Length: 243
Image 1: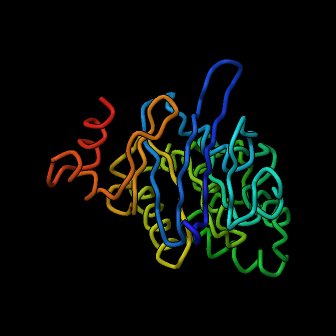
Image 2: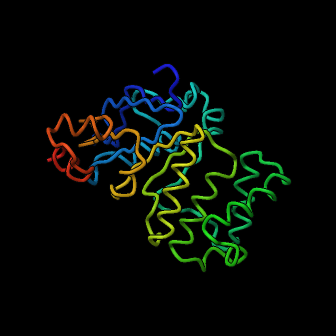
């Protein structure tokens, strides 16, 4: 796919003798939301961490806007907003200080940070808690700050691992709308999740992993046709192809 924002090419990752991801190839274009789903241990989180440059591949490569994550990591990572499965913070730092730190690391000017952060806080209504130490935040509020931090430097690609862990239903709806709007404006979203209902209404394509291999890929309608299940939801299709 020549215009892919994210291009995963023949990717393999081993941990000792264990193969976590095997010969995986996926292309995701601007404006797409691509959901990578599969059972526990299928390689979803490993794939996301490889794309974020947190793991080094055993074989193959990943390109972010044509920049290799292994050979030109700084250029590749500047295009990425990463939302991990477990938010990482410095506990004795306030949420606002953390957002400013992320902005500094990505080269966002102080003026731009001061303009963007209040607008981001409005998305989840965090203004009342953002100046308290992160160690006192609930799991859900930590997740919200982690999501907002990924948008601070205007990324072109979001890498999202289990985006709504700890979120209440209202916040989950807001997060889904945030990702949907980002894609409609030309951004690219690569998300792995067990919460299939979260992505079903907004996803462009789905990839199904099993034991580190991509076993099925397509739009939900294409997957329905392949399965011979008109009108099936993503959960039913997932169970059909991974049984």
